[in-house]
Length: 305
Image 1 (cartoon, one colour):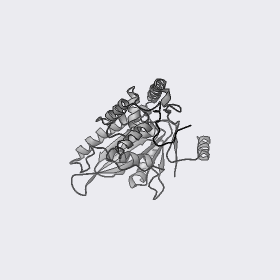
Image 2: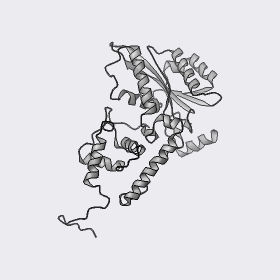
Image 3: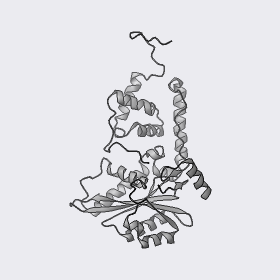
Image 4: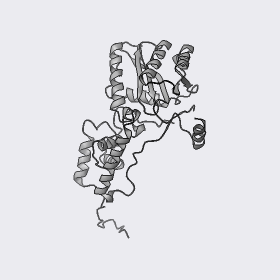
């Protein structure tokens, strides 16, 4: 029976971190490459390096105790994204695309970033920056994307909002020629294209995003090129268990997840008293939906494919 007297001496829990372990965690999470990341991002990065320091929840607890649990990074606190819906079971089944405006150095002038994202892997499959929104630019982009990904003779859905370049007759004709099915957000519904919107949010809250504006079209293009390279190859994406979109798109994820699993199993063997349940589940989902779907909708969709 637990002694509830206020001055009673209590045993130190077997699973408690030592002071050195605690300090090692604080030092690590404040290193330059980790200090802008959340524990949910830090933990898988460490696992990929073959390192286990503590669970995600333990690191969060230490941050709270040290009063270091303020939102890390430049972005605002995230709002969970919540219908046309589509399901992707593999790369190059559903793409989403959109256009975002990049502020120029001259007041009232904006460059337009056109970008296509693979919903399953979150890989940016094509992008361009132009000075205006034109249907011909959208046509060039989709041709570039289908060519780079070798999309021929396979069904592909391209989802977008209801902007004029997306619904222009010539653009829709181009999609038809390429064998691509068009899909649109519902009118006046802001979260029917959540993946593209989330991507643009990530981009504009990068620490080095030039929020004061770009001095030229060429400068905007160079920065977009840099961002796409970082996002595809270096960004540990929370929506795909903190691997990069490139790793997910080109099926490198299984090896990575097996390695993480072994790191955790070895950590549990070293300190079994610290694990009351199974180790962290690193398994990736088998499919991705454009919007949340209930079980009946999933069954109906699977019967129609």
